[in-house]
Amino acid sequence: MPKNMKEDAGEEILREIWGAPEGEEKTCCLCGTVFTEWGNNPEPIKSFEEGKCCDWCNDKYVIPARLRDLFVGGRFIPKEEL
Image 1 (cartoon, rainbow, N blue to C red):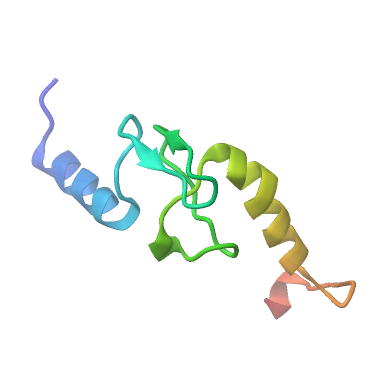
Image 2 (image 1 turned 90 degrees about the horizontal axis):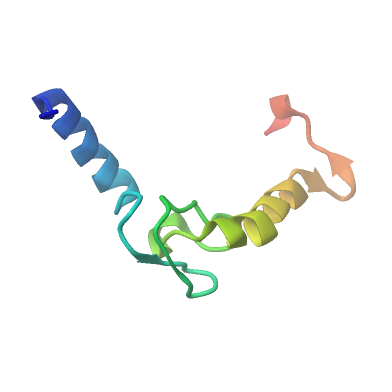
């Protein structure tokens, strides 16, 4: 099925923001593994500008780091204070 101009524009915007789509090879900015998924934002471990991380690093390092950052001095920070 041919794409319309709106779909093409949407894909172009996503590519500008997020980079190569699923299926294209990328290298994880954390472990160096080549992967073909969309990838994940590696913040707070590395900045988004440094690249994307693979699903494994996201699960193993990035999500725990984000959860850790929700706590300051052992105190949970309510959503309203973020």
